[in-house]
Length: 406
Image (cartoon, rainbow, N blue to C red; front, side):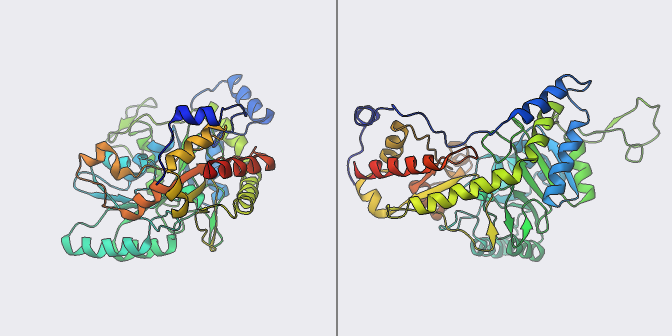
């Protein structure tokens, strides 16, 4: 492998004179601004009518019975797992290629966390490896209570197969759909929960739509929806049918269990509802840009993640994997730093969770999930967002070509 140039030497070769092209960013217009201003001028800034409007817009688009909006995507995973009964002595399994929140949700509930290695072609949880791990866990009495498949980069996991395994082995399914709003699998919109108990969505500014910060659980389970909604408000209810004993008057409420304050405010919800009106346009533009990348990057020593023909990606991220012949001449870091020096705001998604120091203290170690680790060594995230121009794709291609030929 060639020696890796330092950031200082790269800056001499490739000064950052070109404008910066971020890997992702929000797409806002005057309609979005007006929606937020309308709330600012209203009587409600926190828990007003904008939150249920946003919940209805997103859940109806997905085709789910319920939507429960919250402060961020992390807390949606946490509270949904808790509402499914996950607690001390239980187990949650997820993918090692995800943001740490997917795994941390189990630890917040006091459960043990483990991982299922990925399909190296898609970076999604591998159903075959999941089945093999479940068979071993059945023998040892260590089956998971909750499995969290991660729809990485926007593409759905093989949910019918994972659902069938859930029925066979008795675990509940919480989809991490933070990357996937706007996508489909086998003609079903991601988030409709046909093959799961619930799905978690995120509205961070780099996601398909944004509410600034924010998240939402979609589900078709009435009891699960009620419990998630209660947990997001300290575990408190004013529903007389749910209270224990006699009520004392119209002011009365009860804390039924320990929840948190995870509520979304009306300012965020108004922005989210406005963004929902543009979701299909955003998703279509991301698909167009992904197709342009497919064409533009041909001939370079890299490959995009494989697409499953049964689905349509939500295209949160466009990932490339450097091929072995490229890595013989350049380290991934050298290519990454060259692109950054040319103004291309590339990123890496993700460092495998089991390699994080906090997880290694729990007993995880390098070599435990080899497909995830090989993916990590080779992956780079290219810019992709709805306001990108066609010529931006060509600019990324030219920068990659330069980075790979230095």
